[in-house]
Image 1 (tube, rainbow, N blue to C red):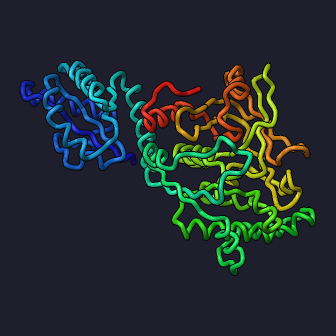
Image 2 (cartoon, helix red, strand yellow; image 1 turned 135 degrees about the vertical axis):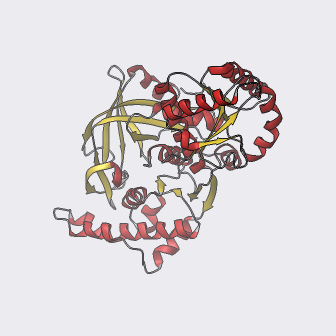
Image 3 (cartoon, rainbow, N blue to C red; image 1 turned 90 degrees about the vertical axis):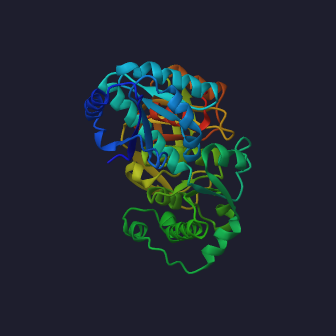
Length: 414
């Protein structure tokens, strides 16, 4: 059940019985009658989505007088719902114009019943996602890998614009946890040791890979994190193993877990998770077919809750540890990336047309055909770093709406 509240604005000049009858019919058609609060704004802003139903004209001055107290309750946009009767649309337009003139966000919700239902559902998902982000703590374990020269961010800006708190964690904290006897429950991962056909080299690395999972899970608990990105290549020299398996399982556990200390990629994953419920596949383009609008994305880990099945292999670059070759359901996907300074973002839908298993690439390999083939030029002309996030399903409209609300920009998509 959606957590929506509908508050009303009504002029005393209009017939109360007629207005009440219209209200009942209108809100019943939108299945929102149970959400009606009438003129009691005492808990305004406490619900996931608050709508102001402008029932009549002549309410502009009432709203203006109420605005200072409403601003004390919320910093979210004002959503003005109108049936169009009794001059309610005209009043809504005047109120929205006043809000815009004074630097506040708002939107009028008006149209057919089907349109308004879809719009309200979209806004609900947007507000739900933004509320999730506003209580998020993400860790940066180590620093971004040396080759990620465009991946540093302003922590204060991220807090101000997204509400996300970034916490620095030393890699030594992870290594110390690896020295402690592990107690975390890893029943699912331990089952991997029973699988047949795993090369001995990989089997010998499994226990160490599982201990990395346990150590990172403790780090999440120690710092009260909702997710993290880790300078994972440091594990190769420190413990002669990789974090690929750990990150795959932690993402499946609901903890955003990113690679290589890539902070913008982690932020993109967290926004994606707020929208879709999964962290997404952090990967880099390995090749691009410009004529077909197709890309191969590859990486050595993928959330285990995103794949139909997976194989174990070594980590590609080092040839050691445990890497994941995941096979995701073919079909609709969305490619997404947010810039570290939040000035721009890329989002494009497409189709996952094949999962590959070539030996000369990172282990999970996806062939994705973009809906608009010419959009591949973004990657060649103005990319936001190398890592991008692959999300299941078509969710561009929702991501566009979330980013617009988060950054107060409506036209910064590439």
